[in-house]
Image (cartoon, rainbow, N blue to C red):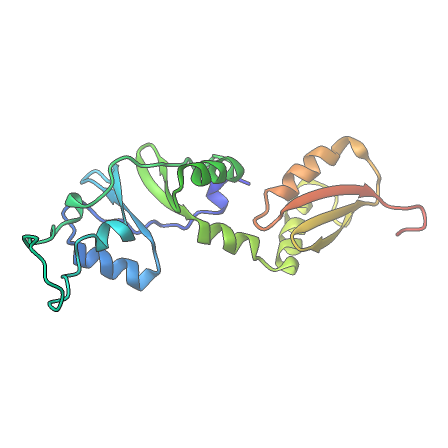
Length: 201
C-alpha cells in the first residue's frame, strides 16, 4: 500500500514564527503529536513535537529550592523545533516507511512532494487503517476489481484484514495482478486468490 493511502491530509502546519502557545493549542485541539514547520514558500524546514514544546515550559514548584537561574522560555516554534526530519513520499510503500519509522524512533513523518508538505503519516494513522471494518474492506476490493475485470468473477471473503478471492474462471494468469490490486486497499493485511471448486464452493 502506498503512503498516499494512509496519510492524513491536508497537513496542519506552523511556521518558525508561530508562537509555542499557538502550536500547543493546535496539537491539543487536533490530537497531534507533531506539526510540520514550513517557511514562506511552504517548503518543509523542520518539525515541532510535543517534547519540543513542553521542554522548559513548566516552572519549578516554589516549594523546591533551586539555585538555577530562571530564564524565559523561547516564545516561537523556530527556537524549539527539530531541523533534521525524516520525510516520506506519497508514492513510497507503507511497509518501507514503517521500517524507517521504527528504526529511527519517530512517531510521525511529514509527506512531501517537491519539497511541499502534502500530508503526515503517524502510527495512529496506520492503526486506523489496520482497524478498518472487514465489510468496508471487502466493498472496496469489489469496487477495485470491477474496474479491472468481469464483475462477479471473484467472490470476496475478508477476515481480520486477510482477503481471499475465489476465481470462478480459475484463470491463474491474472492472479498476481488481482492480488496486487487487492493489497492496495487500505486495511488489507494480505490477499490471496484461489480457484473455485467444481461444485461452486
